[in-house]
Amino acid sequence: MPRPTTPAQYVLILIDLAEQAGCERSQLLAGTSLASTGVDNIGARVEDRDFNRLAQNALALTGNQALGMEMGMRMNLGAHAVLGQAFMTCRNLAEAIDLFLKYHHLLSANLNVDFKDDERYCCLTIQDNGPGDLPQHFIQESFFAAVLNTIRGLLNMPELQVRLELPYPEPAHSDLYRDVFGEELQFEAPQGRVIFPSELMQAQLPSSNPALRALYEQECARLLADLEEEDSVAQQTLRLLRKLEGQYPQMPTVARMLNFSPRTYRRRLQQEQESFQELLDRVRAEHATHYLKHTRLPLSTIAYMVGFNDASNFRRAYYKWTGNAPRDIRSGT
Image 1 (cartoon, rainbow, N blue to C red):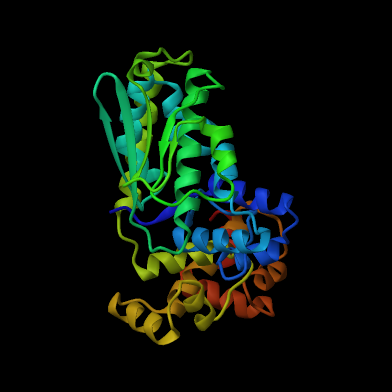
Image 2: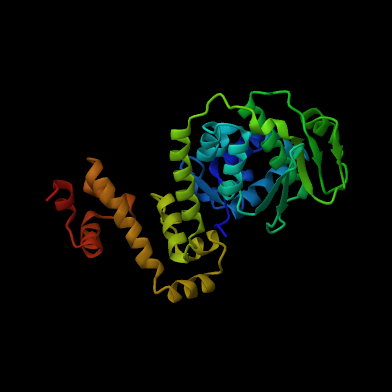
């Protein structure tokens, strides 16, 4: 099972929607690691626990129960990152759906997806296996609106409507469902699924490019393999500290940001034969080396940026970390 993460594009769409509704960013990010790191250097993916907390905050702050629908309608081909680009290079919708079935965990690790085609109608079904932090309607709305929006974009059919079945009672904003999907709606269904005519599967895509499609699929396979590698606590720590460039929090703070108690965090690192101080020093050495090689900042400034009050202590620490003197790195010797 891939590590549960969410594409950064989805996170940024949600933040933008909530801010347009008048929410303060600091309130949106409360309780997430993004509250400390910010979104300027968000990276390609965000931990699901951060996305779920962000969505909970957005729902509470906006009071907008249709937020999932609005988010899904903003999730176009560009929002799906490399997988969206791969969709566009397919010959037809059938190829694009085949890619989606193979690599949908790049978009959400918690969704199980099933697809059937009886040569009259196609049916795409989802089941959410997430922790249950978010309302069911938010998950289903955002997913199916994104599916419809993506198919419309691929086929250049902005008015396309589908049949939608949803496993919960009709919500107060059901008129929006009809505006987006059409009149063929069923609530309190056994499971969530979208149904559309099979004839759409062979519709040719205008941006088809088989050679480019093969390259994009290779990249999708590589990214999925990376996600399926279980991160150690040390790896999680390094990833977080690298994002916190210029900020070097103490161990209890990092433990909380990774959703561990300090005691559990320390024990897990010991099991991996790692220590927090060694990981912190490794990252500070990386940052310092980058500054030495790629900037002309004074040594005293670099020392301050990686947590030292004077250059002499930094020189000694850097030599201990790397076996090199800062001046040798700067001069390239």
